[in-house]
Image 1 (cartoon, rainbow, N blue to C red):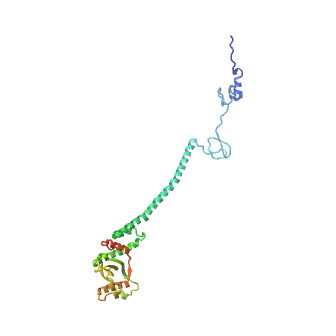
Image 2 (image 1 turned 30 degrees about the horizontal axis):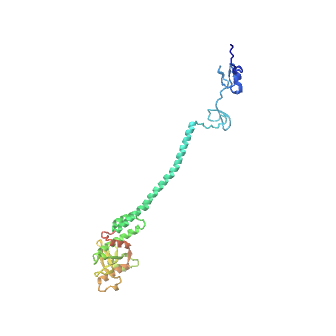
Length: 323
């Protein structure tokens, strides 16, 4: 029995024909050196090694003149225009990340600097507010409370620490004179029938001659002025209970002697015609007060309401003269 071989595509077409059909398979050419068939895309013959297509060296085009240049030059060999350095992808990424980080840090600085500046301003403002307003105000209130308790020396120290704040300078001047008033009050109480009934209506200090007093008058008054020593003369308009339980008013004279203010006497009126002519002592006190009043300058300033509070609280006995 005769075997029949199955026909294949190779029986119909040669290898070359199959390679060229429809361009599906690459075309074959003959090597010019050895004549063997090789691919038309081969760069060299696989049989003899003959180079078919010379590899062209890498080039780069100048952006300035448009001519070709070797790949490794840094500037155009034709026009001299420098080539920008081509960066590796990783380096580009790294630089991009670095730039991004720098921009982020720059943006953070833009945010942080104003915040820090604001915080600094607030802190400085708080310190200034505390030093200029809160602390002086607290010190002031503390000093006022001490004054009402009769602790003039302690209050004086605190007030000197905030000199210039509100009416502190006025208070410092007042307490200097008020400290003298309390010494006068302490002295006169021992002469009163009922010391607790003492009421103070007005306190005036006199010191130094008025501008219109002539030398003759000054000479005549010299001994009388010397009676006051180194401190101003004090005249107090006051009231209190008499021996019959009734309230009386009068003017009391105080002169500084032996380191303290001393009570010199009182008169019921500063008008000599209202005083009994037989009461020589009262007439003498009235005459002295009027003499000082007419020829000496009025000095000093006191807070009468504070004096009345101190007397009411009976907290003046330990107050010493403040210079």
